Length: 111
Image (cartoon, rainbow, N blue to C red):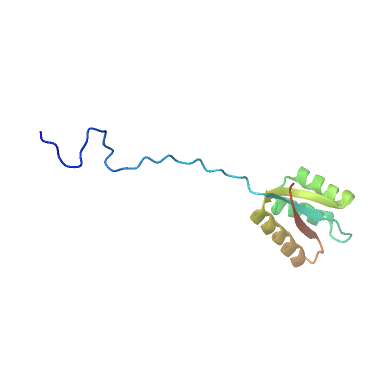
């Protein structure tokens, strides 16, 4: 068979380029603690109910966190990515305001 132009004796790859996939370097997103702050007006039952409905805590955990808020002035409700933490803070503030309670909630980046 006669040689065709542009052909040689090397292996052919049908024009495809060999590409080595780079392993992506993924970083975990920063995490944020959602904190409830103590006040002298919000009933403990209300705080327990927030912990159960917004943070999906069981009764025992909700009571423990509520007591921590009451005795030390602050309690950690959970640790979340920033978007989720911000949403939870807004839910607590809105629900508290709707029910005429001054309960404050904030977030803090985990170090």
